[in-house]
Image (cartoon, rainbow, N blue to C red; front, side):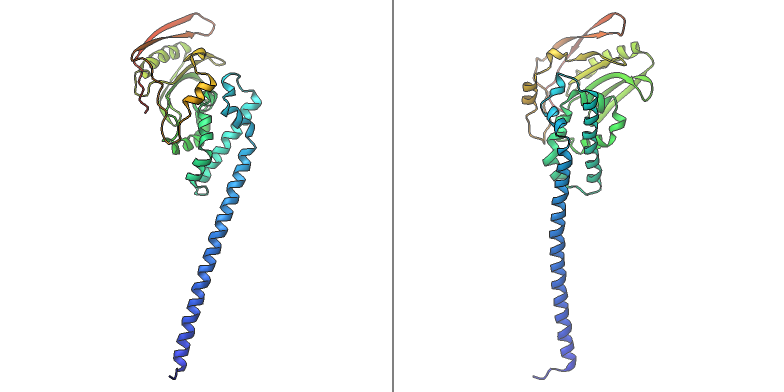
Length: 277
């Protein structure tokens, strides 16, 4: 069979197309492999960054600050540690990090931060406006982190007023400001009684002067030990931690020491719930 010159040209074109497709497939496979390698190297670099904060990670994991408050140097290191999580949140937002991988590797570290009351009270409540990016990360983990409601009365350095705040670490339920500590004190007692009968109840409450914790609930001797706390928090990430079961009706005494004045005693009755939010 005689093949014309035109037919030879068609065969050559088909052959060139096949070779081009093969080259594209090869290039794509190489790019994919290179991307996987680069991504793996990226994750290893992030691991090195977290390793630089190993001492803070251990203190949080071992609940050391529940017994001894952190020093100024440790607080600075804590802020750098939390700042690293903020950088991760920005990379997650840009699609540079894979959320499922990040959650699987570092989710428990976020959980350890939220189990430390110093972090919750001083950073995520009293200085909340400075940690909005970190709170966005908590928003991604809303179904994985413990759902605990907090109430805190404190001096707001941003507004130079007394402030009452209540809500969850990832969700502020409300706040109000006052000109005097006495007004804050009265509203604190009223809000305390209101929140303890809500679904999910109240986990912790603090009333603070400009320098000290004036009153807190539960009182330090009523709070669980480190081993008990770890046992309570030993749940898989992916579900909220339920409240500890207690009697169907209870009453507590909340002692509030007014700065440089008398001690007031509030008798508060509440109906605790065991269902998590």
